[in-house]
Image (cartoon, rainbow, N blue to C red):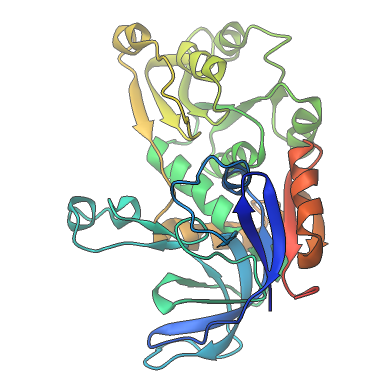
Length: 340
């Protein structure tokens, strides 16, 4: 079968691999679609070489259909439509014992630390499966994982109806956060320097502004009658984005750190002290986040079809990566059965 593999910095190739039969408690999935995310781009550029094992099968945003059951698999049948919560935890570290296995000290993130979904057939433990409704297309279902990220971020923020929330960064995750946050009844403002991304956010009915053309904290002050935003989601990964978020928060506002910063950035702790701000980390998701993400996709509250900019066959995976890196696409999918 065909699989998209990272084989070294800047090198991506489609390889023929032998499919792995499911063992006890495992299933083999015919992968329909796999989305490409920023983590995959980081891997491609060598930023995660300490974690991946070459050749590394990429991908963790996916949808598919169960093809084969291993022994001792219960509650699942061949033909079931599923996505995967790509986390395997140890169960005995301090985080797991405290009831937070999604941030396990020894976490195996499928698609990074072990083979991912960008292949025609993917064998995984039954514990990571999440059921998909028949009313939701497999194409739209491929956005369940990034939507679960957004659900977790909003849940961590404690955002409530009537509050004002600032989303700094209008890429795929930022837009998904804004869409999920909108379902709480909060007011949203997206900050994004890219005109195409601002236009896309606006096409979804979101209010978006250009930080290069406006003083964002001043704009937020006007928007909130001088109070500031109750919540800010920092999704940009830029030092300027962190500063914008902190300066825009109200007294006792909450800053949710979503972006991954490879190098620790400077943070204005005086502002944190002065306004009694709360800094909140938000990493990956829990099963309840995944289940809510699927429900939001099914209801249309998260516009999956609009988010998908294009689909490429597995044999043309490099083209899909190039389109995403060009900045012209929001979300690219790989059809893992085309050419697989």
